[in-house]
Amino acid sequence: MMSRHELVLPKMGESIVEATLLKWLKKEGDRVAQDESVLEIATDKVDSEVPSPVSGTLVSILHRENEVVAIGKAVAIIETGEPAGASPAAVEQKTTATPPPVAKDKAENLPVHAQPSKSEGQRFYSPLVRNIARQEKVSEGELDQIPGTGQDGRVTKRDILEYLARGRQSSAPEQPATRPPDAILEKPKAAPAFAPPGAGLEIIEMDRMRKLIADHMVMSKQTSPHVTSFVEIDVTPIVKWRDRVKDDFAKKYSTRLTFTPLFIQAIARAIVDFPLINVSVQGTQILRKFDINIGMATALPGGNLIVPVIRNADRLNLAGLSIAVNDLSDRARNNKLKPEEIQDGTFTLTNVGSFGNIMGTPIINQPQVSILATGVIQKKPAVIETESGDLIGIRHMMFLSLSYDHRVVDGALGGAFLRKVGDYLEQFDVNQNL
Image (cartoon, rainbow, N blue to C red):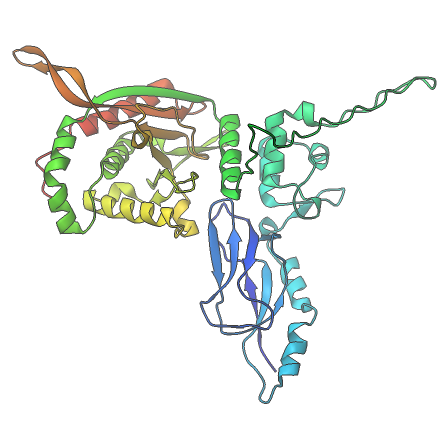
């Protein structure tokens, strides 16, 4: 008797409840080795591969490509042993068999939070869609009226966010008005045709990641009332210190010294001083995070954006931060990040100065409540205070800007935190040992 093993979608973080099956790397009847990749999947966080936990033969694929499947649900059956003398015909017969009932039983026994749920009208909704509907107070009847573009007409995350962005009242179907029996019904107007591409116009379809980014940005603006504060700081000591030590730093730690770990170090220290910046909002509750996990927005070669997270940044020294920053940014650009490496961030840094911008007003990375942007470092004339009087000198100056959620971060807290980050950078110890 051959043993069978269910290949299930692995847990990839508390906030990920479902994944889209992008591509099967093996077909039914193929041999698979332990830890060999069998399937490519996509979540609302990152693309990933699912390896086989056992060696054997892939006998049944339970879900097709492009299907959305709950985390923990079986997607394939792998036989882990073969009876002696089994003929190729017998194996072929097994590989084309109907998926065994155990897959159905597994799906039915999944925890409630990992299964799509039905409305009274028997329409399926994923846990993610349910959560958004609950947060935005979308009623059951209203949810049933949203057109779905997913598998079998399912309402996807994108569908409900677009519905909310358009305005719920304008998107809801109109109730038929009561008319007298002899009323003349107007002929319905045809929907405006989509303009085909022509001279001077190119239509570019968003890729999957760009759609996710767009959804996340719209959701953030709808969720948080954004306020942005600015400070200008003098980073001349840091610039000169880095120029002096960067070669020795690279030799000692085998990694390059950029400004990013210096910014992250200052942010982590300021969060220790102002812990209520390191929070999220759940209804009317403020959730204070004791771990300081700082995400750094990283531009990808294709023009998209991803935010890998440095965990416990306050516990790392400058060398540790530099190694983590360079490793995560390099792997992000080569699509080598693991799902857990872009989760659980509590604060985000974005460097608009890398594009030559002097400042920016970034959008908060939900469910966080703050994001800091660093502008370009420029030489400019500035007032220098000395014991003998004020002087004008050429200094390396830059702007810091902090966008924060005004529901829980007031101007006093946001402004004081931003000023503290600036103070840590201006008061950087240039005599410290590497």
